[in-house]
Amino acid sequence: DGGITQSPKYLFRKEGQNVTLSCEQNLNHDAMYWYRQDPGQGLRLIYYSQIVNDFQKGDIAEGYSVSREKKESFPLTVTSAQKNPTAFYLCASSIRGGTGNTEAFFGQGTRLTVV
Amino acid sequence: AQSVTQLDSQVPVFEEAPVELRCNYSSSVSVYLFWYVQYPNQGLQLLLKYLSGSTLVESINGFEAEFNKSQTSFHLRKPSVHISDTAEYFCAVSDRTGNTGKLIFGQGTTLQVKP
Image 1 (tube, rainbow over the protein chains, first blue to last red):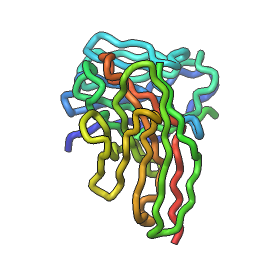
Image 2: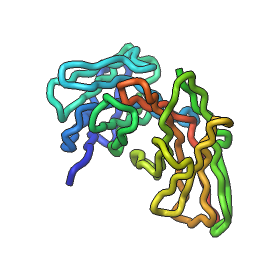
Image 3: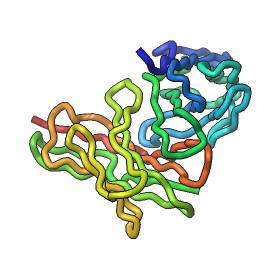
Image 4: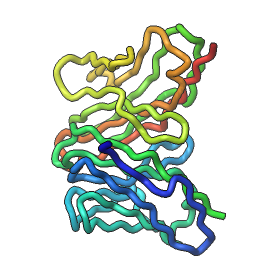
């Protein structure tokens, strides 16, 4: 089935560690996005990419990094510089980022907890 | 810049009663409008969207939303809710004139349908 796969579903991180969240899509979408969800705050954009080998910071990029080496993959690394990483992370994709009316498809999310 | 305000964080309602989830937005440019639904520990699914044309848009499961440009609102309604409608609902906007496909989300409204 076509869709977006995020892994792992649950992730635990120790203080000071970097962790990488995986996001893979087989929808042949050009644009991919990472959002962070916190209770009562909705979703906030971390990074987005409209084309392979190119990406831009969103509203809360500090402490995060991404890469886009392949069209179908957009991994997110949560670095030790992120002071409050415990959250639910959602990856999304859309056909193209060139227009705002294209529907975004979301993965099932990764819940990251700092222990 | 855009912002979205969902006026109610929680809406409790009895089964088969009508419901309205309120959404107001602020933007200096023209926007597309979306409602997404999220079931517990899952990703977001598109419920309905307003791109152009008729200001009343409908979903396949009985929800509808009306775009009111003068009041900058996009309230979501359903005449008779079911237990299965219990979920979190997010209103979002996307810049018509931009070329990124980024979504700006409201804080979310939890709909609790009681038997």
